[in-house]
Length: 408
Image (cartoon, rainbow, N blue to C red; front, side):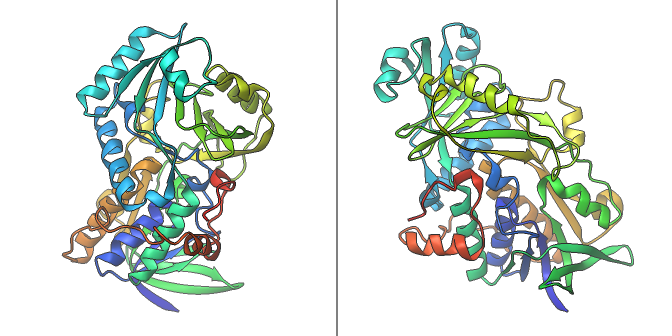
């Protein structure tokens, strides 16, 4: 048996961010994950660092969060990023009013945006479709999740946190109306970790962990496909400038382009169909932006599952395309079960902010008076690519999203 102040369950970007935030504040934190770190939604995403432009006209608050957090990550984690900007691309048959509305909303929110015609845009991206009418250039970037998660976990550990991948939770300890820790599997044996507070940062699996505490967290997971094709040299992220739909984003890597994505509800985030039509649609639609990807060699295909929160989805008729916020559920207030907090929803771009919100709530519960410093302290390995690659290996954080990206 071991003990800790806070047990964080879930080793994606938000979970390791929570462990880092708590450790920097001087809280004894232990993080466990059933697999290697980065094995869930984070490592199976398209890896876009949003400028906020995607949400500007529909969700100004969400867009403000994105541009603010994008700026933070550029400062503290430049070695975990790629790409050099983004284009919102309007084709000749796309709604010109939608383009104008997006540009105006970006300017209202102080999201940098420049409008280019098709000819000017092709000076940067020569293979852009001839039907490109206008382009809104915005400061999108690319996140390499494996590097981000490994660097964040290493920093959490350097500040005193314990990081334990391949340590699945088998049960939660519920005593006298509070969660008091967890039974975990370690090296084929069951071990008890006692904790003053347990954080559920398992994303699409949050409902399953919450059930072990006797509380209901209704998740509405949605799958999306990513298709990596052999296409190097794309300098910017390409977004189709229309209401979000299948196949409207192309994310650059060094020698590949990642095409995405779809949105299909699933019942089980571990067991769901993976349909060929999703792959075909992504290639077909993305080729309208960048025609050479239609015939490019498909290097790999993977699906990810979004951790959507049911009550929030119920308020979104049509659902897709409207920015989704994150929710910190304090189960003492919500369900009468103390010592247990769940975080759901959100985006990879805002993972640090999500972690700060959770750490604030947990520290309040524990009586810890310490401010968040994660926006100001850089992540390690900025000038040490070998050390970063070693950390990815140590935490088993390699994942499909960026398996082609060499941390060196």
